[in-house]
Amino acid sequence: DVGGWNAIRFGNDHAAHLNLDCNIGAGDAYAYGGIHFGYNGNVDGSTFTVNGGTIYADRLFVGGSASTTATGKVTVVITGGTIDTQYGVQLGVGANSTFDVTQTGGTVSWKANGVTVGVAGSGIYTISGGELITTDDGTGAMMISAGSTFHVDGAKAKIFVLNKFRLVGTAIFTVHPDGVSPLEVGGLNDSEQGGEIKMALAPGFTPKQGALYTLIDTDHTPFHLDALPITLSPENAGTWAFAVKEGDYTVLQARYLLPEPATMAMLGLGMLGLMARRRRS
Image (cartoon, rainbow, N blue to C red; front, side, top):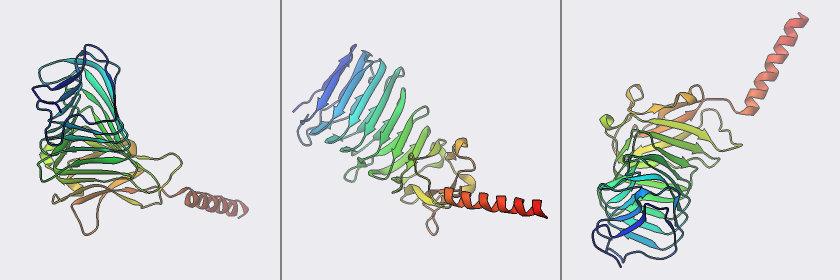
């Protein structure tokens, strides 16, 4: 049961390592001023693993704070448990800090303010399971900053942002045979976007031609394909295209354009047959 300004600091000019299986804090008695991981100085190599239990934090800061500098990389792995914050999670607070967050289970929640993937530093947040959600009736938002990446890998995660979602950096959606988890968000502000979406496929998986996958499902913001505030990666040219869900313009989808391998093989055989007939004639 903790409290006080900057209640807990892990890593002050050294690497810190924490494997969490118990509670920090007590119920709604959030650690006022926040919990810092990789607080100040050279914190390179710091690791923070959440296996179970709950962290109750006013805010969770990774890689510095508003009044300190931090250098080096902090790795966060969430396999279970809960990170329960009042005012969100701030990743890469220091300009010279980097982060690598992997969530395969558990819950990361916030009530107000939001999650910022890359405040001043940069890194990647990969989620393949568990929940990343705004709780209660708060005003929580989410921002992916320039130079940072949010990666949704597969269809087993839940991402729910009650308020606005802002993509300035990169969002990667890796599609598996069971699909990919959409971002359920309260809305977008066109003037606050400008980021890029990259589509990827799980190893060994090829969708059917024309397959549609929901990427962003807003509460009320319509998408217009001729004036999207988000761009599709040039790497996806000819392979993927954006689409708007039929009958619901508040849902942005991605359509797979290439024929599946069996169809390509049939087309190849047809071309060979046509060439053989031409030679005989």
